[in-house]
Length: 265
Image (cartoon, rainbow, N blue to C red; front, side, top):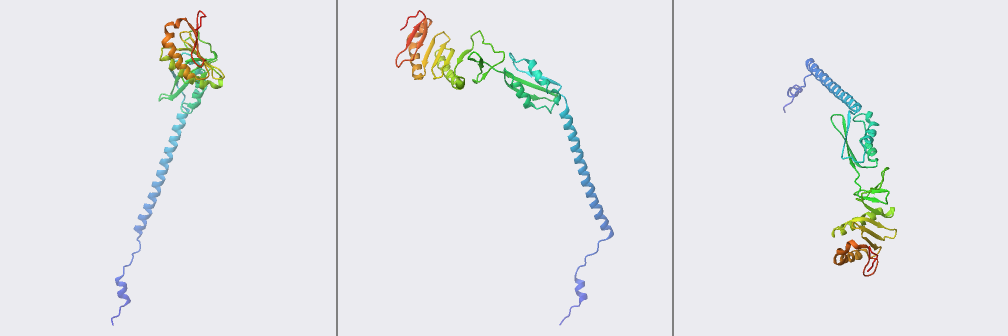
């Protein structure tokens, strides 16, 4: 039986050598280098953040050098807009709140929309779109293309007669406007324009055409009465339109025509 001595066992196993002084110095130097590197990165980041915050502060405090008002302005006073801008011009180029300026400018009577934009030259550009009146509501305000009512403080009814007069209940403005647009389209097919349209509290409707003829529809069966009017107008009334005062369609059948010489049929 072969015996194995402890000396043979130790000879076959590996012994881990103890670190030398040189190895310890290398590890200590590497750790210190990493620490200094991290500190350096933090200092650089802090410098960038500090510098960036100074730049932002300077940008916020930059004054507005000029204001450029753009748009085809007929009723809006440029001085009114400049007056609004003057109240905010010292707030700073980037610090000024454009939405607040927009709301103030759009509160002016003749302003429909306003768009504000900053430029690189520390300039604010204000683009203004005026209200475009297309109708007069109750001789006390205008309606724009969207059927929205606006009442300028200096409202005066135009005397040139270019704008159609629309009258109706204030709480039914949207309905009255929609009805006007529909009638305008229907009459335009026969080369007839509207000078005036009236809707009463019960929905009764009447119009004055641009040739001066009054047309009364009432409040019932308006579509049927419209068709009746156009049929009669095309076949009989067109050639006599200069002599017609009023066409009354408020009948179950037929129409009543009043003539300028008071002769009725």
